[in-house]
Image (tube, rainbow, N blue to C red):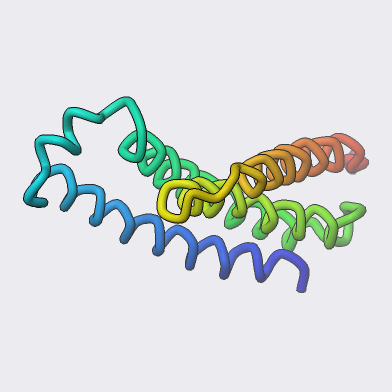
Length: 135
């Protein structure tokens, strides 16, 4: 059943990035060096961490939505498996941001994930435009 993995992995990813939000709350409100964290609101690791949190939840939600739509309309859409995999590959973007923040890795995963998610969304939109409506 195409789309099921998008839904499952989407919910798991969303749960992870929601939990990551609790870490961000801790760093902002309770950590010993919280003042330094708050003062770096729009720069550095603080900004990148918030980007990962927001995009992680957005891309997780997109996978849930894409997965549902692929399951619901798979008989009417073409390239369902490719769209599904592209959307899942899109999750590399927020993972890539975290790998930059915590491991100093280059932004290759961010770019791959961003491109893959954009392609999957546009491809799905074009696929829905091609569906013949019944009169």
